[in-house]
Image 1 (cartoon, each protein chain N blue to C red):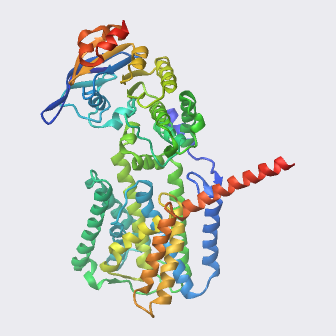
Image 2 (image 1 turned 120 degrees about the horizontal axis):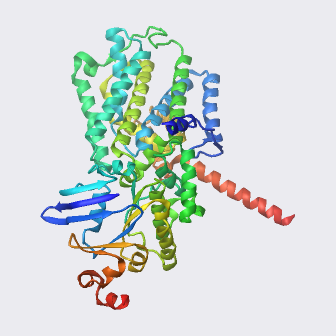
Image 3 (image 1 turned 60 degrees about the vertical axis):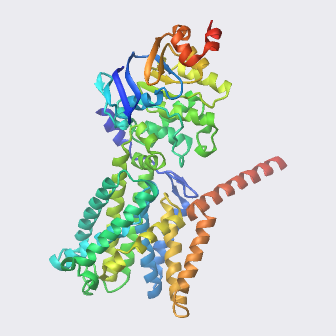
Length: 241
Length: 352
C-alpha cells in the first residue's frame, strides 16, 4: 500500500524527518505518535505530496508518488485531513463534502449522493445545510473527516482528528475510525490522544527528533523504555501495566 | 470508460428554481429583473434613456465576466481594463487595417485576451491576496503604456476611430435598437454562462480553490490549472465586451479604454451587487451605471466633481450596509420573509 524508504526532509540545516522507513499494509490502522516537533506533520506532508523529500523514496500503490503535487497523489486514492481544518468557508457542509466526491462523480447531483451517505456515516447529516462558520470544533473535525472520506480513498491520513473533541465525541470518532478497514480503507494516523490511538491502531510508529525510535503493537510500544523516556513518561508506563 | 459516458449524459440536469437568488438555482427575482431589462429595451424610445440602458447592459455583461475570476475564483483583478482594451483594439485594428468584420474580430480579441489572462495568472502563480491584485494593476498599466507608445498599431494617444458608416457586417448601426439588442444578448449570455458555471463541478472547483487552496489540492483539484482557466475565461469574455464598447462608441484611446478606472468599475459593480453570484453583477450594474450617468447629467453643470462625491458616498453606504451586496441582501430578506411566513402559518394553525 504505502512504502517509505529512508525518507528525509531538511529545512535549512535541520532534518525535520530523517531516514524514516516503514511499510503500511492494506486495511491496516497505523498510528504515529511522538512529542511535538518530532516531525510527524512533516512526514504527513511528505506522504501527501505537499512537501518534497530531500532524500529517500515514497511509494504508494507500487508507484513513486508525484512529489510536490498533492492533487496528483489525491487522485490516486490518498486522502488526508488537516490538523487545522481547512473547509471551504463560503459553502455549506453538504457542498463541502460533495466537492470531495466531484472528481469521481462528475455531476454535483451524483456527488451529492456520495456526500449524503458519507455525512450519514460520520453522523453530521443534520448539519448538511449549515454554514461552515456556525460549526463547533468537534463538528469541524468531523466535517474534515467526511471531506476526506467522500473522495473514496484507499489510504487515509488522519492528522490529530481528536484534538479539541469532547470525550463523547472522541468515543464516537474512535468507532468511525475503527470501522474504516472494513470499508477497504487503510489508515495512517497521527494522534496525541493516547487513549484513542492505543485502543484503535493495530501498529504504532514512534517518532522522536525526526527519526523512528520504535515500532510495534500498542502494548509493546507502551512498555518500550526508549518510548517512555522520550514521550509517554513514567506515569504512562505505570498506567499501562 | 462507460462510467464517464453515463456521467456525461446525466450532466444535463433539471433546472431548479427558487424565489431569491441562490447558488445552483435560477431564481424568480433574477428572471423578473432580466425580463424587465428586455421589456425596457423594447418599450423605451427616449434616446438618452436608451443610451443609459445600452451602457448598463454592457457593464452588466462586463461585470459578470470580471466576476468569473474575481468572484468565483477569488482572483481579484484590477487589471481587467487590459483585457477590455485588448478586445476593443484587436477587433478595431482588424477592422480598420484588414477589413475583418468585428463579429470575427471579437473572437480573435477574446482568444488573445484569454491567452494574456492565462499567462498573467501563470506568471503570478505564487502571489496571493494584495500581491496578486497589485500585479494585475501593474499588468494593466503595462498594456496601457504599450498601447500609448505603439503608435503604428494603436494610433497612440490620438486613438482609433471607426468610420460611422452604418453596416451590419461592420457592426455599425445608425439607430440604437441593434445596440440595445446586442448588449442585452451579451448580458444574457454572460448571465447564462455564470449560472451554468455555478451548477457544474468546474464552478465548485473554483469555489474550493478560492476558499482554501491546500484543502482543494488535498481532494485532487489542481489549483493552478483552475485559476488559469478561470482567468482565461474571464479575460476572454471581458474582451468581447471591449469589442462591443468599441463598436458602440466608435472611438478608442488608451487613456480611457485601458485605464485603471475601468478595472475598478468592474470590481465596484460586483462588490455592490454581490461578489461570486450570477445575479450580483447584474444588480450592481443596474444600480451603479444609471446612478453615475444620472448624477453626471444632473450635477455636472452646477459644481464640477460634485456628482463624483455623491456617487462615492452612495457606493460607501451600499458597501457598509450590504457587505454581501444587493444580491445577498435580497437573499437574506427572502429567507427572513419565509421564516416569518412559516411562523405566521404555525400561529394560524394553533388558533384553529
